[in-house]
Length: 193
Image 1 (cartoon, rainbow, N blue to C red):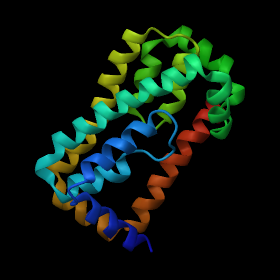
Image 2: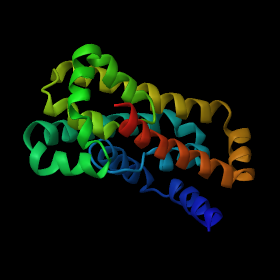
Image 3: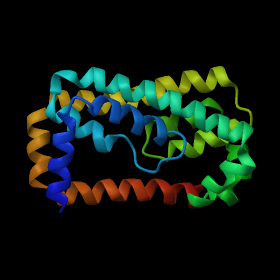
Image 4: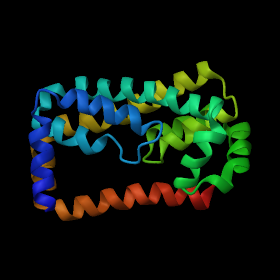
């Protein structure tokens, strides 16, 4: 089943509508969707290595636009939408700690969340709920998300064929590592903050 999913993603990566799907996933992941765009970005770059910078740019722009939606949810709809989303991610009891974290680290905290596999949507919602400066939020989001997506894409471009072979030979291991990183991000959110 895992092999069929991987082959399907590679097939989708070569589809003419793949950039639109990548943009949609990148947008919603920054505000409410739990699956990161890497699920599409990686097979897309592996399938068409010459497009690595365009795919990274699509991820970055769509992710930052989605971050504004997360910010708006936190600023305008925190009780109606933000709190239920945070509850879904197990972060409802950490609000005050995030406020202290923002007061201490400010933009650096957002930047670290933008670069790492940490659930960025939680940081965008919190940023809006505490009224974090929108210009600073924009700058660190562009730099952080851009760094993350361009780094992943560039590594796949530079080491494309060996990376593709490695992924295909160790598909089960790669899927397991991806799940560990995804779940680890949510656990870090719950227990560290």
